[in-house]
Length: 100
Image (tube, rainbow, N blue to C red):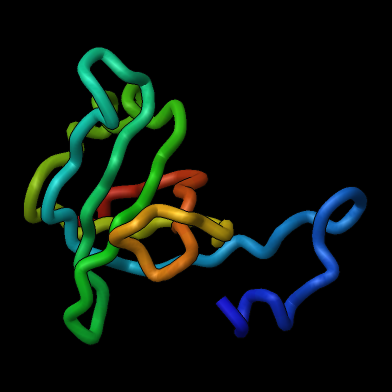
């Protein structure tokens, strides 16, 4: 998170940086039943399993047909988090595309 904080200031008038990475989907599931929000577990290089939160992403994921094993390109931002199993920040997906 220190590297992202070095990019400050962002906020009103200064949008947060958007990052872009390629990954492989390990799991794609709603946060809870019938939720429009998704939790993606993806693997990046070097092999690292990462949790990505995608608010209101369920409809787009269904349109794309996202599933386990697919290679994707994702645009995301970092946000501080108190999720107990996390690294202290969340990756918040802004968009996802399947790589053919």
